[in-house]
Image (cartoon, rainbow, N blue to C red; front, side):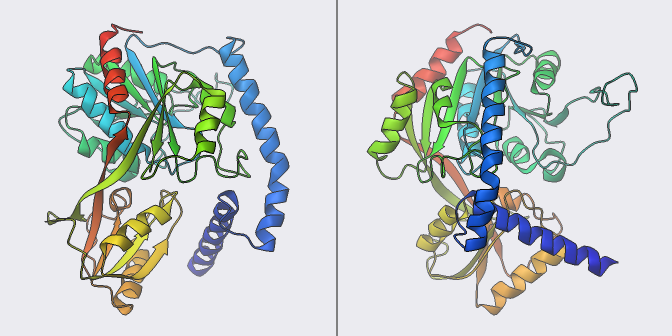
Length: 396
């Protein structure tokens, strides 16, 4: 029975990888193209649903947003993953904290451990949303691990002392909890561009300059969550991974749909290497003369691999997993054995992957993650102005 489960899990993982290859147009095989054609009608249907939903919210027909008695900053993207959102949320939270704001980050806790919900026969679906939001951090202490909170929420909690971090699918409920329990005056809605229940005073939209909109198809054929024209809802557009000047086509696309938003360019810069489940810290020259192995489970792995490739003596081993992949000890043993056999001296992964490594796991060769932070390369004054303007407001 266990062998059958293992086989089914492996096959399902292969299918998920295949679908991801189609979604990102990484797989150009005949089977991938045929499957892409099969998905296209569903993409058109999804686009219609998204537009109708936004129309109903915008005109307050059936659906209405529910305001909070505090300032609300929305950080999100039009695409699924890969924009480098977490470091931007972290940077913005630090800036607000420095301006003496009482800040809470509201996350949906994607891929976090699900809790049981109390049955309620009076509810249409037999369930009642009477569970308290998950308090990941009160600003002083982190209460949940990555499995319970979700990797991104846990990372933010660990890296942002002084900031409350809460997860709940119902971000309105989470926001009210943050206000009532901690007296916050500012909430950051993490990955909230599509969360129309809560309206923000500031909408920060992130665009990955290296792959802005994929093939411009909506899910499930492409990586878009909503049409490109919805750029118009952004107060500020952040071009992430913007090591070079954006091309004219991308700038024209943004200005075609949004001629008022300030454009801010930023890059993700490595700061240091840190031992996973350890205290050892290394500077950026650490890998210069070493044979290195890399693995990651993120939406855009190529950027990470290229970064480590530029910093390492030679990359001897690479392995990719799906975004938010949860690692088992058995799986990690195989990774490390393959890396060791390839001659790797050390293995490097991302910070987001590092929090998904079991705390008691002991690797056979050293394992480090690279700490990344954003650096604004153009539009710093606009960024500072956005923070200042927000702090000058009193409430919603």
